[in-house]
Amino acid sequence: MKEKLQLIATAPMGLEAVVARELKDLGYQDTVTENGRVTFSGTLADICRCNLWLRTSDRVLIKMGEFKATTFDELFEGTKALPWHDWIPVHGEFPVEGRSHKSQLSSVPACQGIVKKAIVEKMKEKYHTEWFQENGPRYVIEVNLLNDVALLTLDTTGPALHKRGYRKLVTEAPLKETMAAALILLSRWNQNPARPFYDPCCGSGTLPIEAAMIAWNIAPGLRRTFNSEAWPILPEELWQEARDEAIDSVRDDIPLQIAGSDIDPKAIEVAEAAAKSAGLAKEISFQTLPVTRVRLEGEYGCIITNPPYGERLSEEKEVRKLIGQLGRLYVELPTWSFFAITPTKQFEHDFQRKADKRRKLFNGRIECQYLQFLGPLPPRH
View 1 (tube, one colour):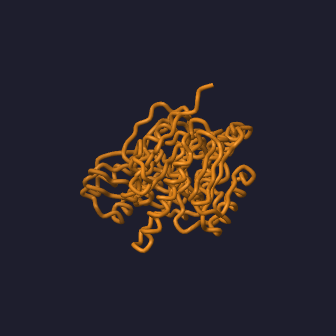
View 2: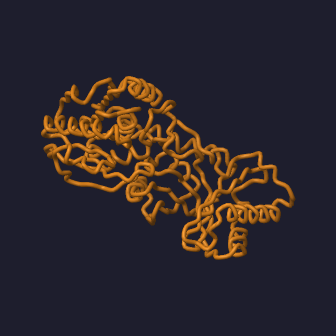
View 3: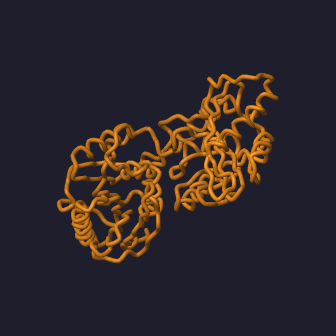
C-alpha cells in the first residue's frame, strides 16, 4: 500500500497543540488539530515511526472513514462501504469499541453491533466464508459518533502510548508518562536540557525519567511492542527501519543534571527501579528527602513537579504546608524556573508568588492549572 493514509494522533484534553508540535518536529507539516486529536497524512512506515516517537499522544489511529449517520441503516451502509479487507486478514480479531456524543444514535452497544455486522458482511464478500474465527492479529475498531457524524478508525497502537515499558511498579497516584513529557515540553528546560532539572515530589520518578529521555532524544516507544507489529500489511522491515532510526538518533553524549526526591522511601524504590528499567539508573539521582531539606546547586535550572493534591479534607492542611515549603525553596534559587501542575486553587497564595503563565490541563479527569514561575534566561554564548 503506497498511497497516503489519513492518520490520527489522539491527544489528552488540552494537549492537542503539543501533539501537533511533536508531529511537525517529526516532519509532518499538514496537520489538522481538533478536540482530542490531530489528523495528518502518512504512509505505512509512518505508523511505525509515530508509534515509536510520539511522547504526548495516547494512540496512533488509521482514519478508515467519516460520514453522516442519523440512522442504523446509514451507519451500516457507510461502514460496509469501507475497505476493511485491505487491512484485516481472514483470521484477524476485530473487536469494536464505541462512543457517542450529541448524536441521534446514542446507544453505544447498538452502534458497536451494527458496525461489527457491517464489517462481517464486507469480509464475507471478500473471503467467501460465513464464519470468522478471529484467532489472529488484533485490529481494534472504534466508531465515534459526534453531532451525527460517524468516524471509524483502526487502532495501530494497542496498550496506550503512555505505557513505555519501563515502569513495572506504580505509586498511589502516578503521573502518566505522556502528561509528564508534555509538562517538560511546555517548560523552559526543554530548550536546553543540559541545565539542572529537579522534581522535589518525584513519586515513581516519571518526570525525571521522561526528562532524561527527552534530553538524550530516546524514542519513548523503543522498549515496547504495538498491536500493528503483528499485522501482515506492516512488514517487519518497516518496524526494523524505524527502530534503527530511533537507535541512531540517541544523543547520550549530553551530560545530564537530573534528580528527584520524595519523602516516601517506597516511592523512591519504585523510581529507582523504573530508571534502571529505562537504562537511565546512572544518569538520574533519587533520594528520600523532605522538601525542607532539599538543597540545589547550579544556575538557570528548572523545578518541574506534580505535588500531592490533597483530595481529602484531612490532607488539605499538609498539602498547603508543602506548597509553602516549595515556595521557600524557590526563593533560594533566584536564577531557576519553577513549574507545577495542580488543582489547588490557593497554590499561588501558599507559594507566596503569582505565576507568570498558566495553562489549563487535565490530569486524568482532574482539572488542573500548569503554573509557570519564570526565572531569568541564561546568558547567550
